[in-house]
Image (cartoon, rainbow, N blue to C red; front, side, top):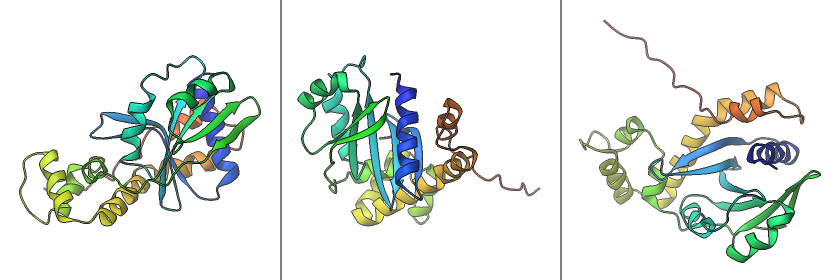
Length: 207
């Protein structure tokens, strides 16, 4: 199967399993250096889904997972039956595994709840405008400096909550739109809907 086909199966699985959720496709984090194939926010917990189809290489999977553990609460690798054995070989037992096939998504292994997150990575997804508001007027020149200041002066729990709320703000509208416009018969257009975050509200210009 293609990555898109597996994403469609996953979102259908979410629609069947959860009443309310926010989902993003190709979610960027770690200052835009990394992307999760799918990210799901449900009950204030954020879960990453890394898709490895039958034709995908798994050589970089352990490296990808380490960055996920620093940002997400739960992490799953989604594979096909034909490459399950190779995924198991390179995936720690603390990482969940799902199988995608023509019948849908099957649960193979649960994910550990990751709590030792990296503050800098959590703040990296926030806009400069939001970061500036959190520094309470302290002037800092770069986004990295803003993230460092907030990381040093706030608790992990607070930063994690701010980061999860930011995800909800960015992708909540697109997720609601996708759920309103579709049934369990999903298409590529539905995945495209959750790949784009909703634009910020434009401020009225004052002359």
